[in-house]
Image 1 (tube, helix red, strand yellow):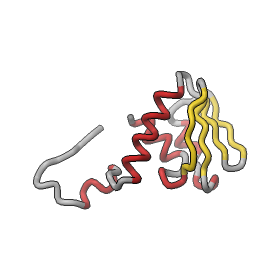
Image 2: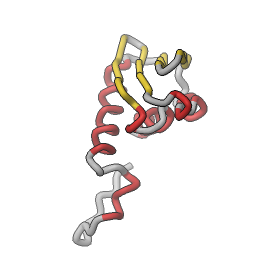
Image 3: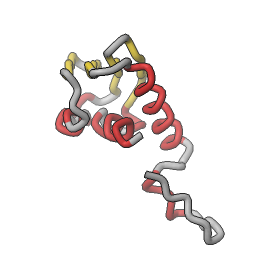
Length: 101
């Protein structure tokens, strides 16, 4: 799941991703603000290539993209529902810890 988190960060965060679609070995993303895309972060996941054109980013991966896109959607959904990893300490959990890696 760490690679999915890293790809979401590299695309500028959950709020910057408009559309996210798998296509064979490509992850196709539409970003609201392409200046927030950090190719360096994306390249840390070792894709075959990163192709950018305007608001569109394609990440060519070494595997079927469908599984990674599903993981990325889970990260985005978690972030949008306020359950992102940066917000875990903001609410009282009644002494229980939800640490995930």
